[in-house]
Length: 128
Image (cartoon, rainbow, N blue to C red; front, side, top):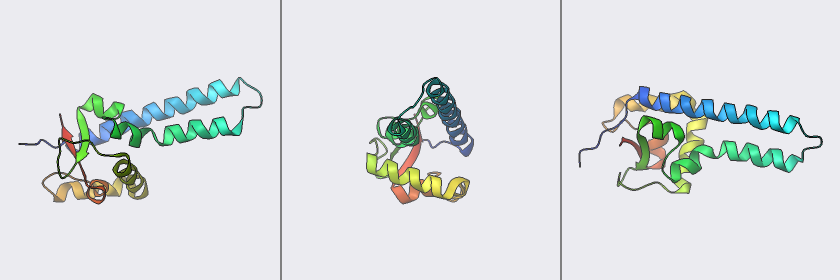
């Protein structure tokens, strides 16, 4: 199969779309919660964790909103027709957070345009 791999710009656009969505959700949640007195800490924690886990969970079940808009998906490197599991998605996400933009430097040095977080988690981004 002749796979197509997204360019760095497409990946950045996907990340920006998801970032805007997350910030918008944070603003909406904050605005809604500010209308109530004595909001339980556990509710604030659940909302924060949900926003934090958005990317790994969405990636596991198909793709984030940004991925869908840009028509790119995260797949297993060993078989790019298969979705990744939640464990791979969490590893990928935490490495991505740890290294930030530096993680993308490896895109230019391999034929599959894999970022460091893709290499270390056994994933690859593909165009659909």
